[in-house]
Length: 145
Image (tube, rainbow, N blue to C red; front, top):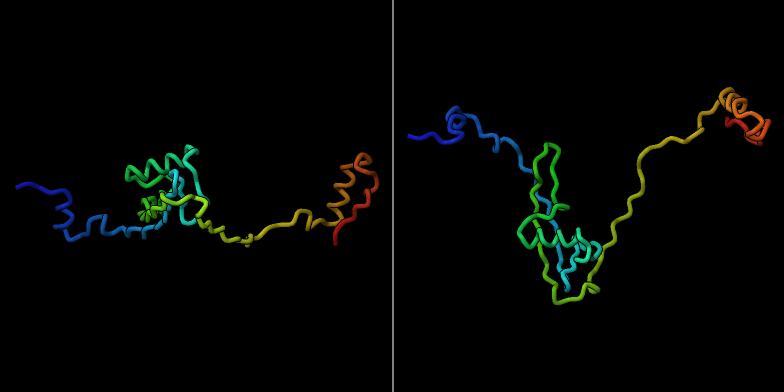
């Protein structure tokens, strides 16, 4: 007979490429649909179909596609699987929706202060360059340190 695709790799004892690459774990979203085709994702703000982006989201869902904004790729470029749990609340007004505010996360990175490391020499150069138009002899500014 015939030859099947990938048979050579299996016969040689190596695994097909799909078995070697680990699939990323699926991301799960809850989409609640309200009266008037309004919806919310994971208890976020209620979104209305009057906005084109929201209308496209619902069209994708109704056709069985993952909406564009929920699609992601991992570091290696593979699509991340998506599970969508639909909650049918179409008999209820969207004003009944419980909206969870996002958690506040304070900035935790580093930074630099401007002008922090001025030496007296650098300060006097700037003052000379600015000249009398900048307020004359220093204008009340003094070097730090």
